[in-house]
Each structure stands twice: as structure tokens, then as C-alpha cells.
Length: 608
Ligand code: F6R
Image (cartoon, rainbow, N blue to C red):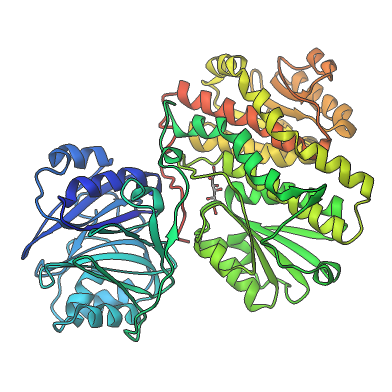
């Protein structure tokens, strides 16, 4: 959460910073600010509200002159969104300005120390202590002061720092929060994420924990905490800048829903070669596969929901027991995991704090970690033993769609890879599954071809107060995701239940007119689901059902039906989720919600 950006070069910095922040607004958007270093003075403007408020206030950046600067878009953790709590934060004499993404866990202790030294604080943030702390340690050498400060602080951080005592310089450092350096021609950048700088450069350094960036004029140095220079490899970003633009769509979310056929194809097809699964990036040997005792799948939010599908799929295809867990629970519950276990971490951003902590916990205990990640070079991908990238391209909308769909494909690929290698999938089954999985892109394409019925239905149902999602087996797994999608962007209360659980409590919530979304794509459970639909109908519910083409019997019970193309039941989640994404999207649009930036949420949850 929070986005930081910095520029040093010979152009006016403020408009460049505002442009970068616009691309980072998905990381937080309750306030924004920038500080510009102009010779020996820092000018700063910051304000509560969206970036647009800041931009209007400083006339698109024209009001702040200078060619070096730092900017920030905030997702509040410590201190409510307000002008004063917005970043940048200044040191007591105004000589240092700093932006921060992360959380300083021991800020109260440091604050007490600094107060006893005569420092006073103007904000409620944890960040302000760091600008004062660097000032406290500053003795003419900024790098020394930064190193002393990071030794003193606990928590996660990416800092961008400027100082009037270093008029041609920009500093940055990170630990457990993402930060990249963009390398331009005579000008350089720092940013939380690639889209912020992509219109200026495609060459970047990914920083490791506690690497310090020191940019002086056009010279970029990366140092370790002993002040030794670190040789960094330049990573060339090859995706198109338009991938991170709306491209004519009203919202990123709908654009990303529409991109799913390609994203799935890019993730799956290159990995099927000559009738086999080829996972070049996974070094897990056949012997290791055959001695796997247990598999854990770990993630947060939608990534966790992918894991729930993954459990069903991997257990079915490999006969290895799978446990799926929320990262925030796994990391603190002293899990029984170790050598011989495979831990699969799923994360779009590759920076989610709980998922990263779970990964570290698993590694410390001796498990092998395979991550399924979308953002290349992210912390989770770097710290894993194996990485299976989802080739979804940049996902900007806070609510995930194409990343979820490509993560599902990663589950299938992993399950097939293991099942083929441990002999649980026969040649004939392999052929069948490989043929089926390759039909997913075109079948998703067929679903998104005609969105009008869903758009129309959403326009009638957007006033609902509560919406319930029901399903059995893999449909239950998708119901979890459908419900999350709806609530996060439309603010309608919604819950997902395994349909067999209805009679054990939730049915008491059904009353006249309650909308129930019933997923009925699993052939072996179809009749059971029909009975559940009858039960809720008998209590007054209105039912929107999703079924496979041909199962028209459902029309007798449901009020509105969407059919997905016929597919092996195992792969149905890849199709079922799409009408649910579309329904949520159109409900939110009808309600006038800010679809891409839902309240209180941020895309990359880099704090606990
Ligand atoms: C929901 C959503 C979140 C993320 C979760 C994990 O639409 O996007 O629930 O799935 O925050 O994020 P990553 O995948 O980046 O670890």
C-alpha cells in the first residue's frame, strides 16, 4: 500500500511525479503529496483526497519548480487521512523530506527518544519519526545517517529522501516494501512499481532488502549497509505501456476482465509442448515430486480462493493431501510443515506482507517453496525456490480478475505436472486434460462476447441489500470468489456458502426477494444443487443460476440463468468466475461506485 515515486534529472520534476503517482494510485488513494528540491530549498504540497485534488492545487505541477523530487500516494495506516498526515514528512528544521511505504513498528519508542532530545511532532504518523531520526543521526553524511536510521527502525519500508544539504542528490532504501530504480538517459527514477516510470524508461533495478540507492546527478549507486557498492543487473521491461492504460474502457476492471482469454492463453499455452507440460522454471525433480508428503497452498483474499480450487484440483490429480491456508493464519500458528512438504504461495503482486511472511516461515522450517506470482522480480518471486509466473500483464484494478484467472491455470499446470510425474495421471487422461485446458481461452472469450444479459440483470439487482452465493464442490470454491468480488466493489453485503451447509444455519437469512446466486456447473452435484435452489425458492429467494450449456432443467427453478460452454468439470471454475466478475462490475457501476478504487482497499497489501 502507498505508492512512492522520485525523479532526478534536468526536467521539471513535479509534473513527472504527478504522472508517476497517477499510475500508483491503485496502491492507495486517500491523500497525496510531493516535495521538490530546488537548489537549497524544499517546496512541498500535500493534501487529503485523491491525487487530482493535489494536481489541481499545484496546477499540474507548474507551481513547484525544481528538477529533483519525491511523491507519495497514501493508504492510511497510522493517523487518519488528513493534510498533515499526508506524505512527504519533513525533519524538524525542514532540511530533509521523506516519503514512506510500509509500517514502522517501533515508532513510539523512537518518538519517545526523539522527544527527549527536543524534537516535536506535527502528525500522527509512524513515518514522521524517520525524517527526524535521519536528521538526528545526520552529521554531514546522508548515507551514514540513513544506515544508522534503518538499524534503529523495525518494520517495513521503502523510503524516498531528499535533503537541502545535498542539492543534487536523491536517496532511497527499502526493506519488505517494493522499490525499483528506473534508469534513464541523464535522468533517473525511483518508484514502488514499474507502471509509474514506464513512459520514461524500461530499464530498472529491483532492490533487495536494505540496499541503499544514492543518485547524484546522473550517477546511480546501490550500496549495502556496509557502504560497499552492489553490482545490480539491469532488468529490461518488455511489456507495452498500453498494458497499464485503460485503452478506451471506462475502468481497468472491465478491461482486465476482457483481457482474460489472452492472459490465460499466455499463461498456459507456452507451457504445453509436444503433448507435455513443460515448466522450465520449476526445478523440482521427479524424485522430489515422488517423495512429496503434503502440499500447502497459501495466499490472501482472492489468491487464497484460488488455493481453495487448487486443493480440489491437486488432490484429485495427484492424490497428495493438500491444505489451503490464509497466509495471515499460517504465519502465526506454528504449522506442522517441513522437509518433504511443498508450499505453494500465490500472489499477484508478489509483495503481500502476510504471504511473504508465510513463505519465510515455510522456508525456515525446511519446506520447498514454489510461488505463483504475476509481478516479475517481486519479493515473493525472488525468495522462492521455484516460481511459476502468471502472464496476466499488469493488473491495475484493485479487484483482481485476470490475475485470479491465470492463477487458476497455474493450479492446473502444477497439478498436471505433479500428477504426470508421480504416475497418478494416465496417458489417456493426460491427453484429455491437456486438450481441455487449451479450450479455456476461447470459452472465456465466448462468455465475454455478450455481456448484455448480465449488464441488464445487474441494472435490476443493484439495489439488493444482501446477496448469497451457493455452490458445491468446485462451485463452492468459485462462490467464495464471486462473493468477495461483489462486496469489495459494490459494498453490498454478501456471503458464500457450501450449499450443503444451508440447512445448518444460513437458510434463516433467506426472505422474500433475497437474491441467491447458485452455481450449478458440476454434473455429479447438479441434482443436489437443484434441491438447494428449490429450498431457497420456497423461502422467497430470487435465484440467478450459472450452469453448463445443455442443463436447461435449471430454468424450471431459477429466475435468471447464464450458461457457460461445456467443459470438463475440473476446469469449470475458469469459466464460472467470469459471469460473476461481470455481474459484480455492472452492479458496482450501476451503484456509481469507484470500481477501480474501492473504498478502504489498496492493491498491494504490503502491511500486515
Ligand atoms: C480481491 C483482491 C485481494 C488480493 C489479495 C492478495 O479482489 O485483489 O483479495 O487477492 O490482497 O493480493 P496478492 O495476490 O497481490 O498477494
